[in-house]
Image: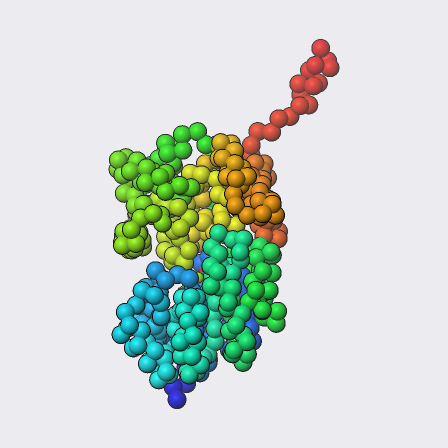
Length: 418
Ligand code: ADP
Ligand code: MG
Ligand code: ZN
């Protein structure tokens, strides 16, 4: 039998080196340690990983973590190993002998955490393997990937309800930073988490300054932003198309700003290298499509810039949320123009899928437009979209420089008095 790991707080301090739990972490950990299911909705950077890592160490057996982030598994496992946590992963990138070693360690009870890509669970061998060992808990990270309507949909997530059928006594914890009630409801239904305790944190990110500007020559506008406010800072620039990513990266490099491209059309090795450089070298700019960013834990991203209109408020929130994870001031900057709206409407009209699907896409776009067009506090509007209330923040563009609204009273009075 493994040595007794101690209480959650002892594990937090001795293994992870932190003094205290943050926010609702302690309650989540207690629920899972006690064998209960949990659904955790917390923004990026809140510290969702510890919500399953600590219980995995406290409970006997291995914590099995389902994650779509294959490219990050090695980094995650290395980081845990550096803390003395016995962690490993199984995914398609491994050689057979590497896989055999991990399987043997699991069966010998020598793993605290085992990361699995979701498609592994559709392989009968993997299920049989898991059945022969002892499981402390299942953690389903990035649980919004189960949502067929989200842009991170992974069909393999749909089969994860089977975990509750095969292992009814093993607690399950699902975690995501996607906050809408519709997504949460879909997670509960599809993962059959009706009995899970829900933990919902505030989705406010007070250190992020939201700014949405009229788009006229977006690359020049971006350059001005970088030169005036973010010289030497690390940041992410999102573009809609791969072509635009490539061109923007070339443009920035020509202007003396080191920028790396990232999109699904690039060779896997190039993508991995650019991601690794962005994480390790200070002050680099990543120019990317939305293929980049999920699960990236880089604390000092000082700005996230959108050169094109995001397709939904969820997407915008996720992408901007990658700025300022360290709590220091950060900028979320978006260039917004009507041409984007027109082209996105055309794309929706000509998209595959039924009328209901197109209506949904159009509703997502409309909510994004409402955020761009609002004269109220952006933060109030953003949080309202996620069903949360806030006071005007004093730290977004509409708060600090209220847009000029047309006041017809004065001209009307002049007209009447003439
Ligand atoms: P999320 O998955 O919610 O985006 P992570 O689990 O990646 O967030 O954690 C974000 C950062 O916060 C990590 O660097 C982590 O070490 C740190 N962190 C989490 N919980 C605590 C805590 N209780 N005390 C100090 N730092 C913490
Ligand atoms: Mg996470
Ligand atoms: Zn505001």
